[in-house]
Length: 70
Image (tube, rainbow, N blue to C red):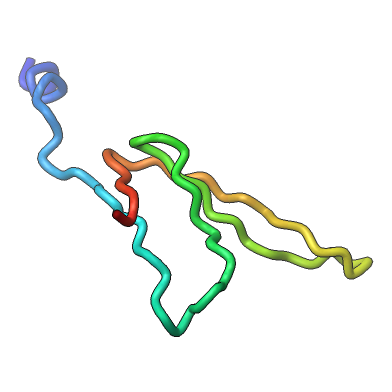
């Protein structure tokens, strides 16, 4: 019975991320983080195939909240 009551409680830990702006040392580097909505983002990773063609592999992450840099 106690297990059912615990499920109804809100979580005690929330994971929140904020996309930071690029700093002056990073200059005009390509921004690899894209915020999809208020709860998820995608990170683009530049990779090279065996035939030396370049491509971007995207990794998707979900959080309780995601905020822009500004």
